[in-house]
Length: 319
Image 1 (tube, rainbow, N blue to C red):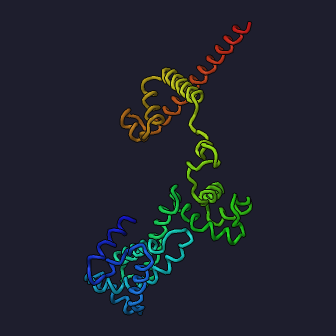
Image 2 (cartoon, rainbow, N blue to C red; image 1 turned 120 degrees about the vertical axis):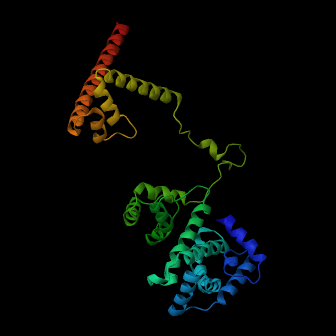
Image 3 (tube, rainbow, N blue to C red; image 1 turned 90 degrees about the vertical axis):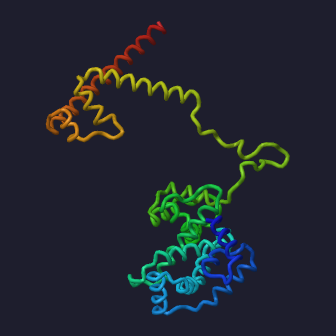
């Protein structure tokens, strides 16, 4: 989005007079932002009738002059909404630029025949564009991948202020439970988001002024160690061995039905198997149940035999 905004800024410098499309993003300094606000004030507020007329002219006839007036009259709305996100430390000009992308998208999608005011419709697009920009630029770590997490990200600070939980550190259990209930998210998500909303810290920052140790040296390696990897591999091998032995006690039809119904990524239906084996669906179901019971008994018997053998060898070794 930021690259698109900068591209539109370059285009605006080469086009005179400047239209709404060319003002979608302005340069990132204070003076151009003031020029943008002056341009926005040149557009008068629209009456519902004027707004509807312009929307129809754009929707039905693609009249660029109508689009310019329709969008231009809502640029102050974009600035007002963008100011509400200044607490995330991003430049107002960037927020406004993304909000303008949203209002242009709203103009493309707006249907005046449904009877809604354009400002109401555009607000959703502007808010979505700004929030998406904040989520992708506020932190080095990706935040808010689901609708619930996005809602938590933009509501947590307000709820913490209401509960007087603005001190740094973890939230109290009561606050976590209250926020999770109000936003319909899990308590674990509340705790994690609260911790992630702290300022990003580089892992290369030194632990002390006179030492070479860095924060990344204290990170625990969460990868499984060699013993765990070996144990998991051995366990998978044993399970596969038990399964193969169990399948060996089934006849061909039982084995094919069980594999098709229980061991495939996309199991076949009873109807498909009934056509393959020329029996009823109920008969296929019965064969599946019987095959699974036989497989269970065979696997359990094999596991018990192995356990007895291991125990016998242990006793012999200690005798």
